[in-house]
Amino acid sequence: MNAGMMTRNIVIGNRRTTIRLEGAMWDAFDEICQKLEASPHDICTQIDNERSGVNRAQAIRAAVVKYLRLSLNTNTSASEAFKLALKTSAGTADQD
Picture 1 (tube, rainbow, N blue to C red):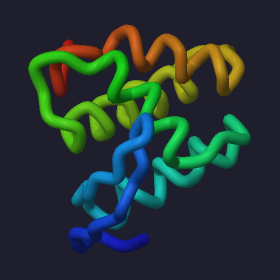
Picture 2: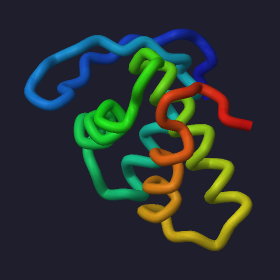
Picture 3: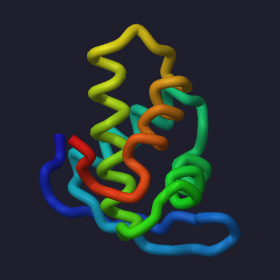
Picture 4: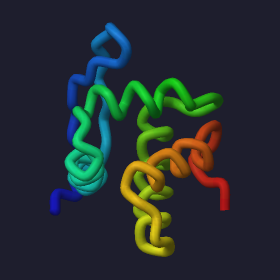
């Protein structure tokens, strides 16, 4: 697990942007992408389409944490947990 900050270039929609997250957060994000069989660009685009009032890095962090909590605490599929994570994390970094 990598705890340092890492920067990645991501294409959201048709625009390239740079996102900086903790290495451990990128590791978790990559695992979610694998489970969903989707590219990081596609997942970031979905998160970006749902966010409001927070920056992209905050929205990604919130979606990752919500996804992991839903995955641990419910019997939902990976895709359903992601859909729920998008809905519950849109707009704020912490809803609880």
